[in-house]
Length: 404
Ligand SMILES: *Cc1c(COP(=O)(O)O)cnc(C)c1O
Image: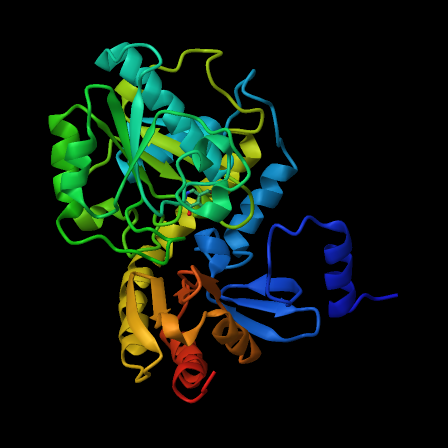
Protein backbone atom coordinates (compact mmCIF):
# COMPACT_ATOMS: atom_id res chain seq x y z
CA UNK A 1 0.00 0.00 0.00
CA UNK A 2 1.40 3.37 -0.94
CA UNK A 3 0.67 6.33 1.25
CA UNK A 4 -0.66 9.54 -0.28
CA UNK A 5 -0.20 13.13 0.89
CA UNK A 6 -3.26 12.95 3.09
CA UNK A 7 -2.02 9.74 4.78
CA UNK A 8 1.38 11.20 5.64
CA UNK A 9 -0.23 14.31 7.11
CA UNK A 10 -2.72 12.24 9.10
CA UNK A 11 0.03 10.07 10.61
CA UNK A 12 2.15 13.09 11.51
CA UNK A 13 -0.84 14.76 13.04
CA UNK A 14 -1.74 11.70 15.11
CA UNK A 15 1.74 10.72 16.32
CA UNK A 16 3.88 13.81 16.18
CA UNK A 17 4.12 16.71 18.59
CA UNK A 18 2.54 19.71 16.92
CA UNK A 19 5.43 22.11 17.46
CA UNK A 20 5.47 23.06 13.75
CA UNK A 21 2.81 24.09 11.27
CA UNK A 22 4.36 23.04 7.95
CA UNK A 23 2.90 23.64 4.52
CA UNK A 24 1.00 20.54 3.45
CA UNK A 25 3.52 19.41 0.89
CA UNK A 26 5.28 16.06 1.38
CA UNK A 27 8.73 16.23 -0.20
CA UNK A 28 10.59 13.16 -1.31
CA UNK A 29 13.51 14.30 -3.49
CA UNK A 30 15.73 17.33 -3.99
CA UNK A 31 18.35 18.47 -6.46
CA UNK A 32 20.02 21.88 -6.48
CA UNK A 33 17.36 24.55 -5.95
CA UNK A 34 14.50 22.13 -6.72
CA UNK A 35 12.49 19.81 -4.51
CA UNK A 36 9.80 17.31 -5.55
CA UNK A 37 6.74 16.13 -3.64
CA UNK A 38 5.35 12.61 -3.61
CA UNK A 39 2.77 13.61 -6.23
CA UNK A 40 5.55 14.52 -8.65
CA UNK A 41 5.18 18.31 -8.36
CA UNK A 42 8.35 20.36 -8.59
CA UNK A 43 9.05 23.41 -6.41
CA UNK A 44 11.75 26.04 -6.26
CA UNK A 45 12.98 25.98 -2.67
CA UNK A 46 13.11 29.58 -1.46
CA UNK A 47 13.80 28.69 2.16
CA UNK A 48 16.78 26.35 1.75
CA UNK A 49 16.11 24.90 5.21
CA UNK A 50 16.71 28.29 6.83
CA UNK A 51 20.08 28.52 5.01
CA UNK A 52 21.25 25.02 5.90
CA UNK A 53 21.13 24.05 2.21
CA UNK A 54 23.18 26.92 0.75
CA UNK A 55 25.05 24.47 -1.48
CA UNK A 56 21.79 23.15 -2.98
CA UNK A 57 19.98 19.90 -2.28
CA UNK A 58 22.02 16.68 -2.44
CA UNK A 59 25.15 18.33 -3.80
CA UNK A 60 26.96 15.44 -5.55
CA UNK A 61 30.41 16.26 -4.17
CA UNK A 62 29.21 16.55 -0.57
CA UNK A 63 27.22 13.35 -1.06
CA UNK A 64 30.33 11.56 -2.35
CA UNK A 65 32.42 12.77 0.60
CA UNK A 66 29.72 11.66 3.02
CA UNK A 67 29.32 8.21 1.48
CA UNK A 68 33.07 7.67 1.34
CA UNK A 69 33.58 8.67 4.96
CA UNK A 70 30.51 6.70 6.10
CA UNK A 71 32.17 3.56 4.76
CA UNK A 72 35.43 4.24 6.61
CA UNK A 73 34.82 5.71 10.04
CA UNK A 74 31.88 7.65 11.43
CA UNK A 75 32.25 8.16 15.15
CA UNK A 76 35.09 7.85 17.59
CA UNK A 77 34.02 10.31 20.29
CA UNK A 78 36.62 12.86 21.30
CA UNK A 79 38.16 10.32 23.65
CA UNK A 80 40.26 9.37 20.62
CA UNK A 81 41.52 11.37 17.69
CA UNK A 82 40.41 10.96 14.07
CA UNK A 83 42.06 11.89 10.79
CA UNK A 84 39.37 14.37 9.68
CA UNK A 85 39.17 16.79 12.60
CA UNK A 86 42.60 18.38 12.20
CA UNK A 87 41.96 18.94 8.50
CA UNK A 88 38.62 20.61 9.19
CA UNK A 89 40.33 22.86 11.76
CA UNK A 90 43.00 23.82 9.29
CA UNK A 91 40.63 24.55 6.41
CA UNK A 92 38.06 26.37 8.53
CA UNK A 93 40.66 28.48 10.32
CA UNK A 94 42.32 29.46 7.04
CA UNK A 95 39.02 30.33 5.39
CA UNK A 96 37.70 32.44 8.29
CA UNK A 97 40.98 33.77 9.71
CA UNK A 98 40.26 32.12 13.04
CA UNK A 99 42.80 31.00 15.58
CA UNK A 100 40.76 28.32 17.28
CA UNK A 101 37.79 26.13 16.42
CA UNK A 102 35.40 24.20 18.67
CA UNK A 103 33.09 21.83 16.76
CA UNK A 104 29.56 21.06 17.92
CA UNK A 105 26.44 19.78 16.14
CA UNK A 106 23.44 22.10 16.21
CA UNK A 107 23.48 25.87 16.06
CA UNK A 108 21.98 26.14 19.52
CA UNK A 109 24.87 24.09 20.90
CA UNK A 110 27.36 26.48 19.32
CA UNK A 111 25.53 29.41 20.98
CA UNK A 112 25.50 27.63 24.36
CA UNK A 113 29.19 26.83 23.96
CA UNK A 114 30.00 30.47 23.25
CA UNK A 115 28.04 31.62 26.29
CA UNK A 116 29.95 29.19 28.51
CA UNK A 117 33.34 30.09 27.05
CA UNK A 118 32.75 33.82 27.25
CA UNK A 119 31.52 33.62 30.85
CA UNK A 120 34.61 31.62 31.77
CA UNK A 121 36.80 34.15 30.00
CA UNK A 122 35.03 36.85 31.99
CA UNK A 123 35.89 35.20 35.31
CA UNK A 124 39.40 34.01 34.49
CA UNK A 125 40.72 36.77 32.26
CA UNK A 126 38.59 39.88 32.69
CA UNK A 127 38.26 39.38 36.44
CA UNK A 128 34.48 39.50 36.85
CA UNK A 129 33.37 38.31 40.33
CA UNK A 130 32.17 34.70 40.30
CA UNK A 131 28.56 34.24 39.21
CA UNK A 132 28.15 37.88 38.15
CA UNK A 133 28.87 37.70 34.41
CA UNK A 134 26.41 39.49 32.15
CA UNK A 135 25.84 39.04 28.44
CA UNK A 136 24.02 41.65 26.39
CA UNK A 137 21.66 40.51 23.63
CA UNK A 138 19.16 42.19 21.30
CA UNK A 139 15.38 42.30 21.29
CA UNK A 140 13.81 40.07 18.61
CA UNK A 141 16.89 37.85 18.58
CA UNK A 142 16.84 34.25 17.44
CA UNK A 143 19.69 32.10 18.70
CA UNK A 144 18.02 28.71 19.12
CA UNK A 145 15.65 26.74 21.32
CA UNK A 146 17.53 25.51 24.38
CA UNK A 147 16.59 26.70 27.86
CA UNK A 148 19.68 28.87 28.21
CA UNK A 149 18.97 30.59 24.91
CA UNK A 150 15.22 31.11 25.33
CA UNK A 151 16.03 32.71 28.67
CA UNK A 152 16.96 35.84 26.70
CA UNK A 153 14.41 35.57 23.90
CA UNK A 154 11.81 38.33 23.61
CA UNK A 155 9.42 36.14 21.60
CA UNK A 156 6.46 35.15 23.81
CA UNK A 157 5.98 31.91 21.83
CA UNK A 158 9.61 30.89 22.35
CA UNK A 159 9.50 31.53 26.13
CA UNK A 160 5.93 31.16 27.28
CA UNK A 161 5.45 28.34 29.79
CA UNK A 162 9.10 27.27 29.79
CA UNK A 163 10.47 29.07 32.84
CA UNK A 164 12.26 29.40 35.19
CA UNK A 165 14.94 31.00 33.07
CA UNK A 166 18.69 31.46 33.33
CA UNK A 167 19.81 34.84 34.69
CA UNK A 168 22.73 36.91 33.44
CA UNK A 169 21.35 38.48 30.27
CA UNK A 170 20.38 42.05 29.39
CA UNK A 171 18.26 42.92 26.38
CA UNK A 172 18.74 46.07 24.30
CA UNK A 173 17.18 47.19 21.00
CA UNK A 174 18.82 45.87 17.80
CA UNK A 175 20.65 48.45 15.71
CA UNK A 176 21.19 50.93 18.55
CA UNK A 177 24.89 51.18 19.41
CA UNK A 178 24.38 53.80 22.10
CA UNK A 179 22.00 51.43 23.91
CA UNK A 180 24.84 48.91 23.95
CA UNK A 181 27.26 51.34 25.51
CA UNK A 182 24.67 52.35 28.10
CA UNK A 183 23.98 48.71 29.05
CA UNK A 184 27.62 47.74 29.64
CA UNK A 185 28.68 47.33 33.27
CA UNK A 186 32.01 46.16 34.74
CA UNK A 187 30.48 42.64 34.74
CA UNK A 188 29.62 42.59 31.03
CA UNK A 189 31.55 39.79 29.35
CA UNK A 190 29.95 39.63 25.93
CA UNK A 191 27.56 41.08 23.36
CA UNK A 192 25.76 38.36 21.38
CA UNK A 193 24.14 39.56 18.17
CA UNK A 194 23.09 38.47 14.67
CA UNK A 195 24.59 40.52 11.79
CA UNK A 196 21.11 40.51 10.23
CA UNK A 197 18.17 39.25 12.27
CA UNK A 198 16.86 36.42 10.11
CA UNK A 199 13.95 34.93 12.05
CA UNK A 200 12.77 38.41 13.07
CA UNK A 201 12.14 39.11 9.37
CA UNK A 202 15.53 39.93 7.81
CA UNK A 203 16.18 43.02 9.90
CA UNK A 204 19.22 44.87 8.58
CA UNK A 205 20.79 47.30 11.06
CA UNK A 206 21.68 50.88 10.08
CA UNK A 207 24.97 51.22 8.24
CA UNK A 208 27.86 51.95 10.57
CA UNK A 209 26.15 50.12 13.45
CA UNK A 210 28.64 47.27 13.62
CA UNK A 211 31.67 49.54 13.26
CA UNK A 212 30.45 51.41 16.33
CA UNK A 213 29.61 48.14 18.13
CA UNK A 214 33.14 46.89 17.48
CA UNK A 215 34.64 50.11 18.90
CA UNK A 216 32.43 49.95 21.99
CA UNK A 217 33.21 46.29 22.67
CA UNK A 218 36.94 46.90 22.29
CA UNK A 219 36.86 50.00 24.49
CA UNK A 220 35.05 48.16 27.32
CA UNK A 221 36.81 44.80 26.96
CA UNK A 222 33.56 43.08 25.99
CA UNK A 223 33.66 40.03 23.69
CA UNK A 224 31.76 40.59 20.46
CA UNK A 225 29.98 37.33 19.57
CA UNK A 226 28.45 37.28 16.10
CA UNK A 227 25.86 34.60 15.49
CA UNK A 228 26.46 33.87 11.79
CA UNK A 229 24.63 30.55 11.88
CA UNK A 230 22.17 31.88 9.30
CA UNK A 231 24.06 34.82 7.74
CA UNK A 232 27.38 32.99 7.40
CA UNK A 233 28.81 30.82 4.64
CA UNK A 234 27.79 32.95 1.71
CA UNK A 235 24.15 33.70 2.47
CA UNK A 236 24.57 37.50 2.42
CA UNK A 237 27.01 37.58 -0.50
CA UNK A 238 30.17 37.39 1.62
CA UNK A 239 31.61 34.33 3.31
CA UNK A 240 30.78 35.96 6.66
CA UNK A 241 28.36 38.86 6.97
CA UNK A 242 30.85 40.72 9.20
CA UNK A 243 32.85 41.46 6.04
CA UNK A 244 30.09 43.84 4.88
CA UNK A 245 30.74 45.89 8.01
CA UNK A 246 34.52 45.79 7.80
CA UNK A 247 34.82 44.34 11.29
CA UNK A 248 36.15 41.18 12.91
CA UNK A 249 34.21 39.53 15.72
CA UNK A 250 35.95 37.98 18.72
CA UNK A 251 33.74 34.91 18.54
CA UNK A 252 31.89 33.78 15.40
CA UNK A 253 29.24 31.07 15.41
CA UNK A 254 28.52 29.06 12.30
CA UNK A 255 26.27 26.08 11.69
CA UNK A 256 23.48 25.30 9.23
CA UNK A 257 25.27 25.35 5.81
CA UNK A 258 28.47 24.06 7.45
CA UNK A 259 26.82 20.64 7.13
CA UNK A 260 25.88 21.24 3.48
CA UNK A 261 22.31 20.14 4.18
CA UNK A 262 23.49 16.60 4.94
CA UNK A 263 24.44 16.54 8.56
CA UNK A 264 24.25 18.82 11.62
CA UNK A 265 27.62 20.51 12.09
CA UNK A 266 28.29 23.76 13.93
CA UNK A 267 31.38 25.49 15.21
CA UNK A 268 32.58 28.22 17.51
CA UNK A 269 35.40 30.19 15.92
CA UNK A 270 37.52 32.37 18.12
CA UNK A 271 40.85 33.59 19.24
CA UNK A 272 43.04 31.74 21.70
CA UNK A 273 42.12 33.88 24.66
CA UNK A 274 38.41 32.99 24.78
CA UNK A 275 38.42 29.32 23.69
CA UNK A 276 41.67 28.79 25.58
CA UNK A 277 39.79 29.01 28.89
CA UNK A 278 38.10 25.63 28.24
CA UNK A 279 40.25 22.88 29.73
CA UNK A 280 39.87 19.08 29.32
CA UNK A 281 36.63 17.83 30.81
CA UNK A 282 34.99 21.26 31.03
CA UNK A 283 32.95 21.09 27.84
CA UNK A 284 32.18 18.52 25.17
CA UNK A 285 29.82 16.62 22.95
CA UNK A 286 29.67 12.93 22.00
CA UNK A 287 29.07 13.73 18.34
CA UNK A 288 30.93 17.05 18.10
CA UNK A 289 33.90 16.81 15.72
CA UNK A 290 33.12 13.28 14.59
CA UNK A 291 34.86 12.16 11.40
CA UNK A 292 31.65 11.96 9.35
CA UNK A 293 30.68 15.51 10.36
CA UNK A 294 34.19 16.75 9.59
CA UNK A 295 34.33 15.10 6.16
CA UNK A 296 30.91 16.52 5.28
CA UNK A 297 31.82 20.01 6.52
CA UNK A 298 35.12 19.96 4.62
CA UNK A 299 33.29 19.12 1.40
CA UNK A 300 30.55 21.67 2.16
CA UNK A 301 33.16 24.44 2.54
CA UNK A 302 35.13 23.28 -0.48
CA UNK A 303 32.22 23.43 -2.93
CA UNK A 304 31.06 26.74 -1.48
CA UNK A 305 34.41 28.28 -2.38
CA UNK A 306 35.36 26.31 -5.50
CA UNK A 307 32.02 26.72 -7.20
CA UNK A 308 31.81 30.46 -6.56
CA UNK A 309 28.64 30.25 -4.49
CA UNK A 310 29.50 33.28 -2.38
CA UNK A 311 29.98 35.45 -5.45
CA UNK A 312 26.81 33.99 -6.98
CA UNK A 313 24.92 34.95 -3.84
CA UNK A 314 26.14 38.54 -4.12
CA UNK A 315 25.44 38.87 -7.83
CA UNK A 316 22.12 37.05 -8.06
CA UNK A 317 20.98 38.36 -4.70
CA UNK A 318 21.30 41.88 -6.07
CA UNK A 319 19.36 40.85 -9.17
CA UNK A 320 16.60 39.09 -7.19
CA UNK A 321 16.31 42.11 -4.88
CA UNK A 322 16.00 44.46 -7.84
CA UNK A 323 13.28 42.28 -9.38
CA UNK A 324 11.35 42.04 -6.09
CA UNK A 325 11.65 45.80 -5.57
CA UNK A 326 10.30 46.44 -9.07
CA UNK A 327 6.95 44.78 -8.20
CA UNK A 328 4.16 47.32 -8.22
CA UNK A 329 1.86 46.26 -5.42
CA UNK A 330 0.07 48.26 -2.77
CA UNK A 331 0.18 45.22 -0.49
CA UNK A 332 3.94 45.54 -0.09
CA UNK A 333 5.39 47.75 2.60
CA UNK A 334 9.09 46.99 2.14
CA UNK A 335 11.47 44.79 0.18
CA UNK A 336 14.93 44.30 1.63
CA UNK A 337 17.86 41.95 1.75
CA UNK A 338 21.53 41.33 1.32
CA UNK A 339 22.90 38.64 -0.94
CA UNK A 340 20.31 35.87 -1.18
CA UNK A 341 18.78 36.69 2.21
CA UNK A 342 15.71 38.59 1.03
CA UNK A 343 12.34 39.52 2.44
CA UNK A 344 9.07 41.03 1.28
CA UNK A 345 7.20 42.72 4.09
CA UNK A 346 3.47 43.25 3.62
CA UNK A 347 1.40 46.02 5.16
CA UNK A 348 0.01 44.82 8.50
CA UNK A 349 -3.54 45.58 7.27
CA UNK A 350 -3.14 42.85 4.65
CA UNK A 351 -3.68 40.45 7.54
CA UNK A 352 -0.84 37.93 7.46
CA UNK A 353 1.50 36.42 4.92
CA UNK A 354 0.36 32.80 5.16
CA UNK A 355 -2.21 33.02 2.31
CA UNK A 356 0.52 34.41 0.04
CA UNK A 357 2.85 31.59 1.01
CA UNK A 358 0.07 29.13 0.14
CA UNK A 359 -0.53 30.90 -3.19
CA UNK A 360 3.21 30.75 -3.98
CA UNK A 361 3.26 27.07 -3.20
CA UNK A 362 0.38 26.58 -5.66
CA UNK A 363 2.61 28.09 -8.33
CA UNK A 364 5.68 26.00 -7.49
CA UNK A 365 7.55 28.23 -5.03
CA UNK A 366 8.21 27.14 -1.46
CA UNK A 367 8.75 30.10 0.86
CA UNK A 368 8.09 30.77 4.50
CA UNK A 369 6.31 33.54 6.35
CA UNK A 370 8.07 34.97 9.37
CA UNK A 371 6.44 37.16 11.98
CA UNK A 372 2.99 37.26 10.41
CA UNK A 373 3.46 39.65 7.52
CA UNK A 374 6.95 39.06 6.13
CA UNK A 375 7.93 36.45 3.53
CA UNK A 376 11.53 35.39 3.27
CA UNK A 377 13.15 34.48 -0.05
CA UNK A 378 16.41 32.65 0.58
CA UNK A 379 17.04 30.00 -2.09
CA UNK A 380 20.17 27.84 -2.28
CA UNK A 381 23.17 29.89 -3.44
CA UNK A 382 23.45 27.86 -6.65
CA UNK A 383 20.38 29.54 -8.15
CA UNK A 384 20.73 30.91 -11.69
CA UNK A 385 19.40 34.08 -13.29
CA UNK A 386 17.00 32.00 -15.39
CA UNK A 387 15.63 30.35 -12.25
CA UNK A 388 15.08 33.76 -10.65
CA UNK A 389 13.26 34.90 -13.80
CA UNK A 390 11.14 31.74 -13.61
CA UNK A 391 10.41 32.50 -9.94
CA UNK A 392 9.52 36.14 -10.60
CA UNK A 393 7.00 35.13 -13.26
CA UNK A 394 5.19 33.32 -10.46
CA UNK A 395 5.91 35.59 -7.50
CA UNK A 396 4.82 38.82 -9.16
CA UNK A 397 1.19 37.87 -9.90
CA UNK A 398 0.74 36.66 -6.32
CA UNK A 399 1.38 40.17 -5.04
CA UNK A 400 0.05 42.24 -7.93
CA UNK A 401 -2.89 40.35 -9.45
CA UNK A 402 -4.54 38.66 -6.50
CA UNK A 403 -6.85 40.48 -4.14
CA UNK A 404 -5.91 37.96 -1.45
C1 LIG B 1 19.01 28.46 13.11
C2 LIG B 1 19.69 29.43 14.00
C3 LIG B 1 20.19 29.04 15.24
C4 LIG B 1 19.94 27.67 15.84
O1 LIG B 1 20.43 26.64 15.06
P1 LIG B 1 19.86 25.13 15.32
O2 LIG B 1 20.76 24.29 14.46
O3 LIG B 1 18.44 25.12 14.87
O4 LIG B 1 20.00 24.85 16.76
C5 LIG B 1 20.89 29.97 15.98
N1 LIG B 1 21.08 31.22 15.52
C6 LIG B 1 20.61 31.63 14.33
C7 LIG B 1 20.87 33.02 13.88
C8 LIG B 1 19.88 30.75 13.53
O5 LIG B 1 19.37 31.18 12.37
